Image (cartoon, rainbow, N blue to C red; front, side, top):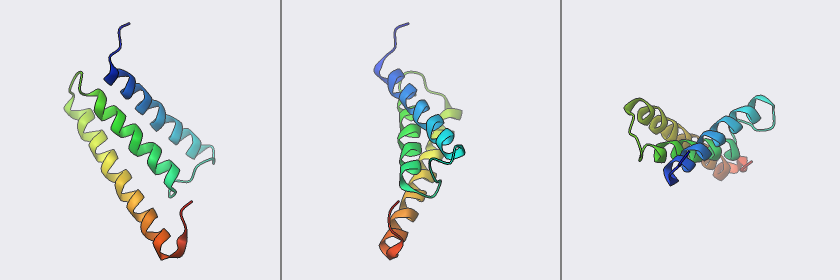
Length: 88
């Protein structure tokens, strides 16, 4: 198997998304905290980068939406930290 850089980035992204979801279900991460949101952002970005090798509109739309939602969550988390909620 000959994997290109974008394949490796996509695999790392997939691992990040699946691992963050597992850790959320296991109670090790909280969905409204920065580590979970960053893992999802990096994971979705990695999967988007993997499309460099073979574009797929469905995957692009899913992962672009995942990035947007992750950025929204990060902005909310950082916004509440500025209001005294602290970053977890």
